[in-house]
View 1 (cartoon, rainbow, N blue to C red):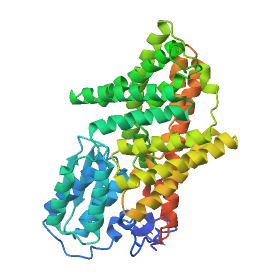
View 2 (cartoon, helix red, strand yellow):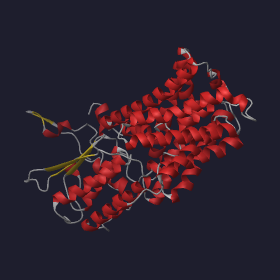
View 3 (tube, rainbow, N blue to C red):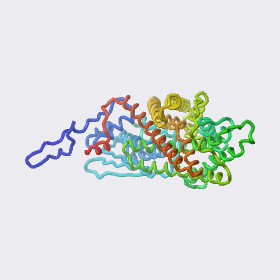
View 4 (spheres, rainbow, N blue to C red):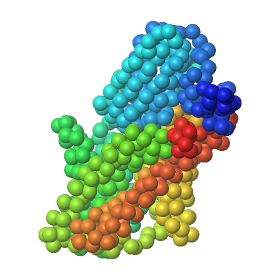
Length: 486
């Protein structure tokens, strides 16, 4: 434990800048996962980190290049900034580099290394220009980093394995993803009270929106326009079902709003929101701000597409009832299977490994059960119930990820799908188009609160799991020290 200097005749000594209580000594746990060991080292002052236990395994620029390439795949796959930094540090440290400092922002990776105290530092950077969701590839990168940090993979072998990971095709093709998008929307519509007719309508609308988004992506249009166009078929289908429901056999009393709600479930950027809040809570404020801005742009695109169609439908004589938002649906034996099907479809859309699908689906079922018990059965606050359910998702997801030595994202991102605020978002937009500003504000504020409860709950569950499995004493992050005035 380092302690502050004592005042002398000429003033305070050099150690006076150290806090009165000293800095806690961080000892990386023996036999712990590489994420825990690298986080412990990263949170130590650079001058107090122990040197690598192995000799330098290659030329410094080559090791740094491999480190940046691995960090690029992790950041492009949606991994949190703290985990990307830990992976980059672990790779460079495993190959014998000391005095290294990785830096991660939303689109830029950097790493600096000073081979010796008398040498000038070497700095390299890499820009992440393309991002895509493939959790199978993410798991492969985690296994590679695990092998590198265990000193089981040579530098040349790491390059070969990384090239193989880049060449691997996605486990599911585009038409499988389109079908999963329709299944997700249909299950979401059942979750909020829809029947067989609504399930079919929501599925068809979502698949049509997905194909339109693929078409725009192939033309190079930004994601903002892709989301806006992808939201239009669901809104249009909802208006048509509401207007012509009396022509459909067995569709008496059909709830057309469930069609649009189901379509929104397939589009809401839950993955980006969770990553944004996680980065903010772990002290990466620039990256968190950029991710939140991305979420805002995508949501605005969805709002634009849905609002435009609803407004045209309203002006042409359509009138979907905004008071449907106040109706409650409590059918657990229907909603629980629908929530699990929704989670399974979401996991396929995220390109999760086939071995992960069952565990992620069960985690989603647990989340919906907890939410249903706390909110629907016990009558608890919806935001609090959502946060509690998301906390269990994060807890179980972290335990599953540690058991399989992979990223936690495949186990939690799909599992929070049934809890996304699709219904509140839709009814807020509907009230806005029908000139009910107070109801619109209430619903949209509720949607924002539910989204934050989801993200914070997942992060809290992750941290609880880490504390339960963490052997060294917990150490505050640098951001926490600055908050206390240090």
